[in-house]
Length: 197
Image (tube, rainbow, N blue to C red):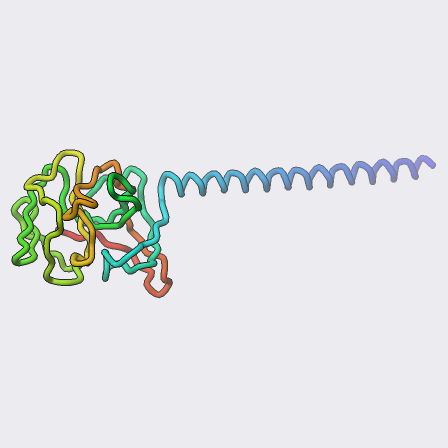
């Protein structure tokens, strides 16, 4: 009888240990999942953004429907970067363009020769879709004012950009970040390089 009680107590103890291990495992798994979720949300909110290209203004660098990863954490605008700009003023949706000039840059566009000069230097714009392009309905500043950047699309004849009153000069605080990687479509996955001037 005593042995029977001992066996029964051993089995109860064994079950309680197994139950405790299972609950610990479940709790730890839930904790890891929650931490992973918080980490992913932090990354997507503060470090990276996903953006879908709409329209042909950046053709042939980017096409309509392409999906890109945008680096936004501590981003400082740089000439030649491809950037996503959030809506502001007349702009009712986010757009993607290339930075041409920064605050205090001297800017001149010769529309007769389709040449862009920044601080007296002609830019080597190997990335534009068509070699000739014209003005839009906006005014080109001689000097980009403090707090703003001047942007243009790579498909100059089919781009609403800083040449137009619709977009105009872009406030720096409306720049979401730099598009640095295209991940869709899968046959065009590549790193997006900034233009070197």
